[in-house]
Length: 209
Image (cartoon, rainbow, N blue to C red; front, side):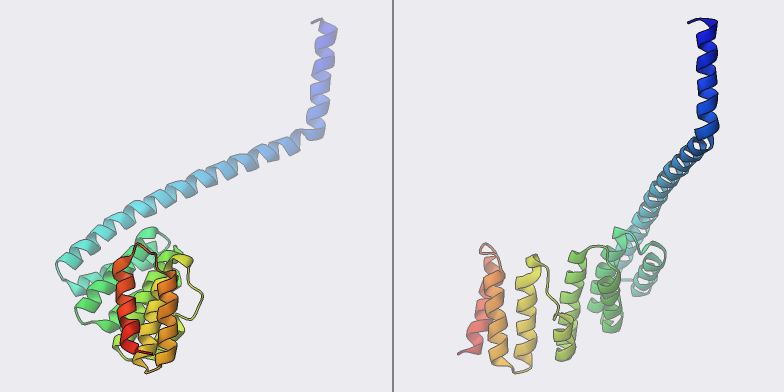
């Protein structure tokens, strides 16, 4: 390349930079900031998950040791500090079971309601609803249980939700409605789930008609 050609190329670069230099600089800076933010977010999420995992281990120890005060404290810490992680929904269900088995129905209901309101995965919300409805059934709070299960369930839960609704309706003495619910359950439950289907059929036969 001759000296003249080099000068022309240099002048072209200068002209281009004068026109687009500031825009290019800002585009590069924005890309760098976005990249740094994305990496920072991923790091923060990994750190949250790691700390939540440790806290979940503490919950398991509290459950195994039947230390209900510690179960409640750890569950509260998990929900306050790591409520956005998958460990929080697992903690809520485990804590609810432990508290209920220990006779603390109010504490169990609070944990199940937290899972219904805040769980990341819809499957966990459905499980929490099923368990809370069972607690309400034990308390003879049938209307509240039916209201809790009134929304359209996930397809995989259609059978078990209908079965639980049948239990609530049967307990209310609404035999026809209970039969209808149990029939829905039988239609929705997988054919290979023989134990669940047999139980629903038994309850349906017990209603007669």
